[in-house]
Length: 255
Image 1: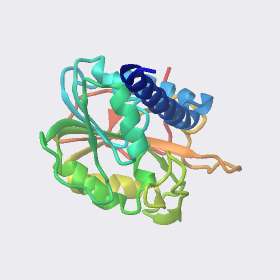
Image 2: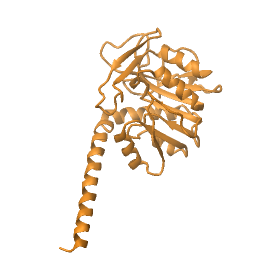
Image 3: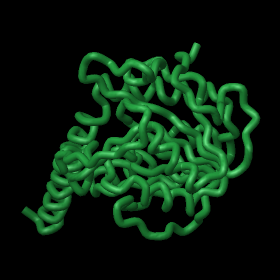
Image 4: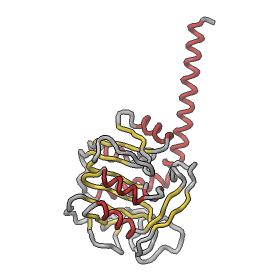
């Protein structure tokens, strides 16, 4: 066998091995983030965000905790300049393959560093805060990096008081807390923290049409159901009939 053929065979074997590893990693990522329940939640939350009529086109956007990047295209399709961030190496590799022409960066929200390009007009924080041990510190960091709108969707706990509790999460699971510690908090606690960073904090009068987004906050569910809430924090007042600064105990599902 010629040396040239041997080199070609070694190179081909290396390529096949590398492609096999990438395929395995992609399957692992998608086994978490592309399950039917995840896709259902993503579709309904983005549908709701679009319905609010916020000024989101052609903006600079910081997306934190991007996961597999299923939310990213929402802003890319609207001609936004998006900085997509994650902390886990597996997810960063997946994002770089999925969005090779876009700005992908590592960002550890428990130990964040200043980002080039800040402040961003919009900061997008969906499904992230409750995976953090100190979400109040994270909100202060995000506020410092935001010049206009902070969009938040997060798991919360029922209760009219201001309360936060720490929880443990399995580090080995990609969608869970990178450092193994998360938190659960009430809507009131979150609203208070947002008001420390922004002069205006709005609650949508509608909720996504999904079982995890309740409309009646006066009666806790009688089963162990995850519940989520959305907030829009702003640097300037927004005139929008779908948003209110009032405290809401009841909302409506998006039509």
